[in-house]
Amino acid sequence: MWYLKFRVKHKDCIYSPKTKEYGIIDFTYPLGHIVKGKEAHLSAIHVLQGSQEGMKKYVAYLKKHPTVLQIEGAGNVFFTKVREQAHTVEYRAVYNPELLFPTPVINGKDGYETWELASWNREPLEQVIRLSKTPVIEEFELLEFKKKVIHDAYITSLLPKLPPKQLEALRLAFENGYYAFPKKTDLNKLAKFMKVSKATFQEHLKRAEAKIIPFVLQQKFT
Image (cartoon, rainbow, N blue to C red; front, top):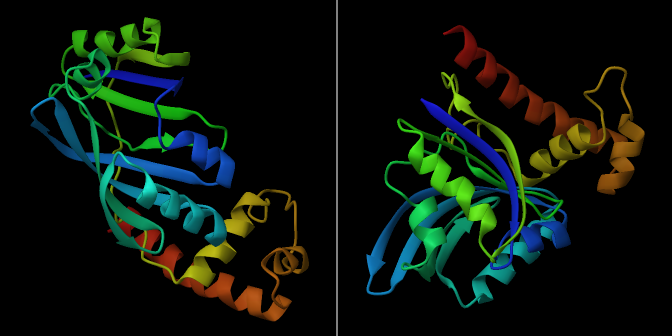
């Protein structure tokens, strides 16, 4: 199978400028699309990673955006239906039915999107690469383009659902290097970031780990 990975920044993106502004990551996975006249209605699932405040601001922004037709969800997971122009070169290339999405599009904290696409044929991916020459594209970095076996794919329910405070504790621990070797932080500092006592933070973190570690090991060894 042919595989393509690239980073891009384009003028009409409604997601990545705001993920940068609010300091969050939006893992966006396309679910389907329909064409109605000159418009295409695109459905997607979004899984957010970041602070509770940043995620709330991001969702509030999307609810008010004129191209977002519908949005619903809870916590850090929600669905959207967004309208785009169906006749554009960009739409026809990216939503070519020959393309597969092995992973979500990552709208990162740096304001860029990272895409991974696959296809049984080379040409649909070459069409996507050619978009880098269109006026709407501000920056384009080709990271990988070759034929290879894809060993993994995105699964929405990859991890068990965690309560907001447990998820926040786990995020802070990961982003600040608690799981690095050697550790780059400790529980006292992480508790201050979360504005709770050390004991409370440790309880949130342990409860989160107690749910995630058995789940991951069960997937690997069963």
